[in-house]
Image (cartoon, rainbow, N blue to C red; front, side, top):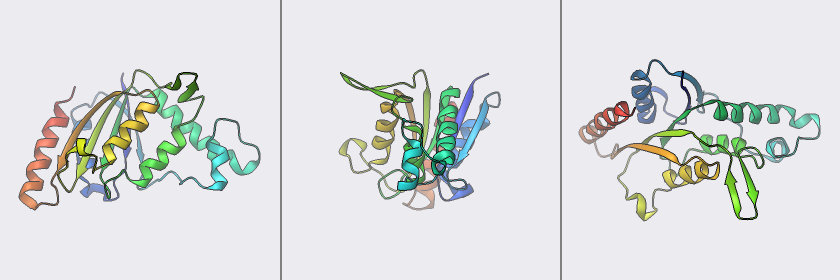
Length: 195
């Protein structure tokens, strides 16, 4: 049975378009085993000086870092156990939500999910597929670099070696109810159709 790691990052709960897109994909794949991380209701702590030693490559020294290291180890294990990562990506002020960035801060670990070589960094998380349920109020040309969220997400995934990324975007959600409903309907159909 294929396993999916679901990452929900929206701060708007059931009203979240990215969460609705995640639900649409899950509804069409009832045979998949899923593990969910709701980063809104159960956020990963932001990196602070008291946490930094616990998320790095070396084993932490001191009791203060044991819980941080255990959390990072757990999050990394979920990534390696999954065949698919299903990521909800709302666009907040042109970027990824800080809760999702914190998750990456704990998962990106030198020597575990990537390593440095003489030729540069090499991702160590291979063979994964990512489906991104992307929601944004405006409409943007991703190539222009104004909306940085998707590019940032792909960079972080690529750093770990994950390059098989499919994106379904619902955009123009702030342009009125009719445009928002059309965008949501189209995106639901697109994401549900992904095998």
